[in-house]
Length: 161
Image (cartoon, rainbow, N blue to C red; front, top):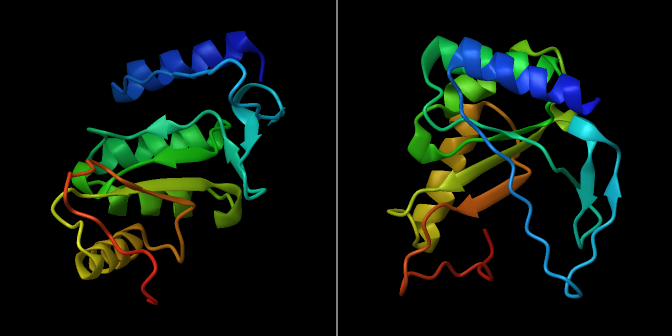
């Protein structure tokens, strides 16, 4: 997608759905080399496990209710392939419905959600993750982050689920 079309899409999302977002890219000279495939909204970076992650995504903080759902659907139907939500945002159900309503295959969308800071124990983490999956109404997320890491609270990822 040419840069002018990308700017227009961002303007439409801002005007129609009152969403503000930005793109930040950090480059550490000489330390990291990433291969970027594609252009514009279709740009992807290859992670160290070979999985490809879109460079552009729609963050949906404060995108609630029908407006939030419609914003996600609109973005997906206009080229966005990553949606960044979180349990804390209270909109995982709307994001999940928008994914279904978009007409795209689930595997063509990169979904990011995050663990709340009050669920950093192992069992709490599993419960929170499964609740996010249920609210999103999808079988998997592509990227699960700790929203606000808390010192002293460690999740033992070596335990079998």
